[in-house]
Image 1 (cartoon, rainbow, N blue to C red):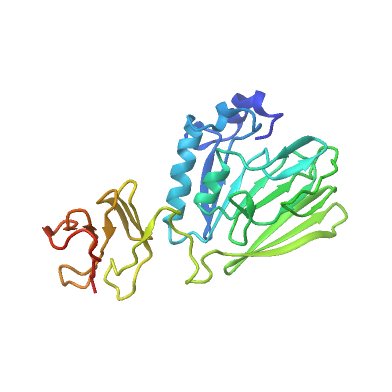
Image 2: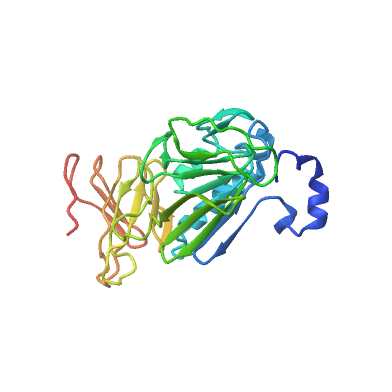
Length: 293
């Protein structure tokens, strides 16, 4: 939904069937998670701000997709763009609401419109160029008068042209062709899945502690994190729960001897060892280093 459609929400709902009768939704197709947002104007925080229903839904949606082992790509669609500039409206760089979510949940591509031209960014994370960041694509060459784009530090390429964007999934690659009104390709590139290489996976955030271990007993260690600020344990594709807090150190291990590693913590301040669902005991003192294997 674009900024010119915002006065006709009731007509949109009457004409098309929206999930829960709302104007944001997501679907999964062929390993791609598509998230569609209602952001007709970035200045209207009442649509997408942190206190809105849409924002709460988006957090749950992206989090769920991040834990889905079948999802190879996450793509977001919205009207108003970030990281784009032209005659039609001044630049929108990093905002403090949606872009941090795209960073945290490793969104691969954000598609937007509004500027009546084509712009593709470099991959961006934390408001800087990063090869593991998100790609922002402004593709709005289908109707209004084309507007001159203004390249900035984040711009990879841009064009003033009527056009459409064609995306094909081939294996673990997205192949992009941007085709103008004369059927000429004005941009072409390939985006690999973040999960194409099993040794490069994004999971967790900067304040998490890595806690890899064989939690499902299949003979291979699983990607996992422990978050001291909340006691969160998250094992990619397996489980999540809360156990421990503060200065506790993660000490997973096969404490039952059944071939599956258990969640456990060591508390240096008191020497406490606690294994989730099994037992706890005191062993050691402050300054000791826990050894589980």
